[in-house]
Image (cartoon, rainbow, N blue to C red; front, side, top):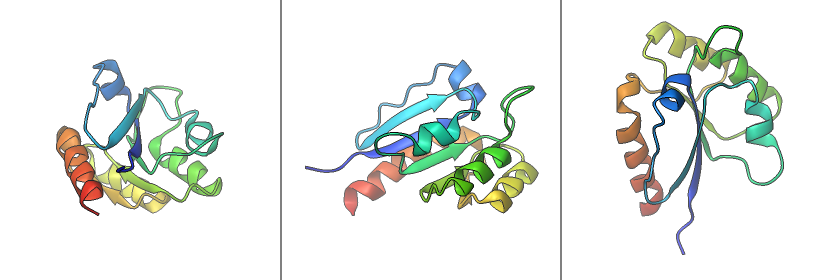
Length: 122
């Protein structure tokens, strides 16, 4: 039986739009901010395999780079992908420990489909 890749997306805009991702091979959760990212990604049970992180998630909220630093400090070893539309913000998140950056947030769904197809074929 093929395994399901666990994906968590921290993005206020994706959450506000109510976007739902029903992609075979992926179990996707969307959160409106990253304030609880360490608890969500390293708490009880299996953490996500891949985290997508936006940079700016609202006034008074933890930034994407702060959340990534906290995840790495808490020994989260999974893949983290920055998803800001701002290249400077993506670079800040890479500097904080993100493995990669998606150049345009509009391509998130396509990237998830591609990710599922890669995992299903391995």
